Image (spheres, rainbow, N blue to C red):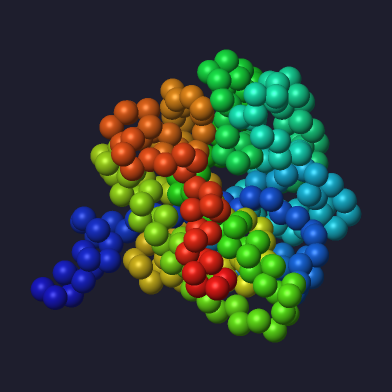
Amino acid sequence: MKFIFLILLFTGPFGSATEISFTMDDPEVTQSPILTPIERNEKILNTFEKFKIKAALFVCGMRIDNPIGRNLLQAWDAKGHLIGSHSYSHLYFNSPRMSFETYRDDFLKVEPLIEGLKNFARIYRFPFLKEGETADKRNQMRLELKKRGYSQGYVSIDASDWYVDSRLRDRLLKNPNADIKPYRDFYLKHMWSRALFYNDLAKKVYGREIKHTILIHHSLLNALFLGDLLQMFKDKGWKLISAKDAYQDSVFKLEPNIVPAGESIVWASAKETGKFDSILRYPGEDGDYEKDEMDKLGL
């Protein structure tokens, strides 16, 4: 009896584990305080291979439009990870100064860089998860994506790992021998907090468990701590699945009717209902939300 109870405690109703996949934005080849670009990429790929899961890599063209960047993509492709588009210039679509035409043309520039890869998929992730501050721009881009055979590379669990990475880099620039364990601990706590929030919200909005896609970045932080992150979810009883599998969930076909458009698909769906405004901050995630705690911890 105790054994059965423990299974239910860790896996949820009827023994079904919450499923999560990992989607990584912005592969890049800039220098970092420790680890070369090649070393960072190898550590990330080796970690995914160790855990036997396939991620999705969303490519911002300007960051890999060079020989080292092209080799990086070849390495991801050889390992069988899904490769999608994240625009060329990482433009902010919600700016009133950003026209649909300018944004569309930038979106079109990245495909020639990745369409030759065997694991290229016509799946697009909006930079900053911003899909337009007006219904007209939102609808124009949705139509453009459909016209070109693209689906949306939605995130279900949003987070601010990029901000933790920026603080870690700053510390290591000042002191390459700094103790980085507190950054690891903060990172894992932050990611687990956001996973619990979005998973609980998803169950309330959709009335069921969904297959999750969590947003992380191709960064020094994840070169160092991706293995800890994956192990944490396993230890919490969540099941690690491939991004390709996760995107089969019907939730990723939704088009929430909200303006401004964007954020996590779970956030957007909750906003559309009008029932969760008391717990929905805007934007859904941002470094400003983590700043005070990291300041207090001296990170």
